[in-house]
Image 1 (cartoon, rainbow, N blue to C red):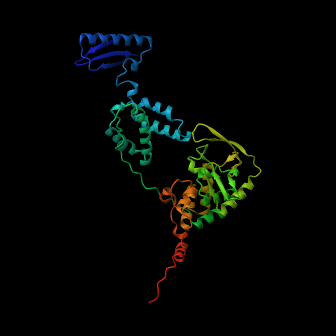
Image 2: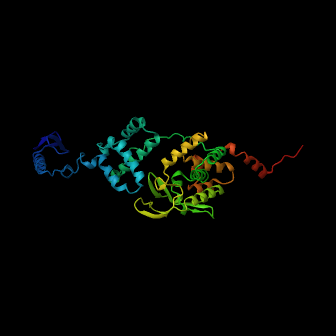
Image 3: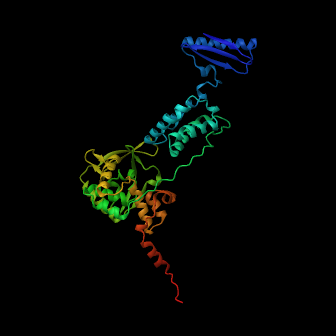
Length: 390
């Protein structure tokens, strides 16, 4: 049953669905006889639609602040539909997890037009900061903004209430690259030839662990001492490099060329595998014929990160060397190269696949004094500066 309730300056329409009371107020509608008659007709229509099982609040009350489109939660599936194909499956899985855990429970039932700066500040400073790092909060906030914009693009003058949030991340931890003595110990004490070759390439090529794992014989040009980096392996997915800059040809040190030549001979009898490589559009795939360099006989595929990490930890312990993660090989290469003083940061950035030198100076390269004492001698020779005797 539906009914009307006249108020001072408006009329409320009341109805019940499954025994639960609900209502909608016709604002700016004084309870005149004509307005009450109009409201009663709406109430009768609501009652009829409920009895037929076709009642839709948004259609009957399109300007209601209670309509689905008025709430933040309405735009979460809109965002999902529009953006699920714009990033890799592994990235999308991370996005969905953050939305499900930190955004949807808090914002789903909030009227989106009424969200203000203070609401966002309370959420960030009083809720998220108690359980998340600043970096993760920034990621979550960016996802919130992405969802909010699907409402804002239909508004004339939307004002982003999250624009006043200020978050700073802590300085990254020291990368702690391996010294040359440690590198010698790591490589020379390895008894498994494949792992010995792998550690050599990892420490002296500048490849990230995700680029190193799916490296194939077809990527290597032994005569030219180069490798073409075409793909990565992230969260169980082969995909093209994350940006065009990372699809690159790198120059290889002789020690790396020798290790790759040796490893190529070890897998020479292995058959090439047809591998689906996810393209940069995150939708289509490339088929490539690849002979894995770091072949794992138990899985009939290349080693994965957990498999290598287990062997790496065990080997460092045997070497009595402090543990650093696999990707420290990339940092070590950058630091060792810079410590020679023999190349420019621009050359190193190209080798690592960066568009500029900012990441080199800020993150990867750390000058290693114990491995760079020769530089001052080279500098003295280059300057040829002397003082005449008095």
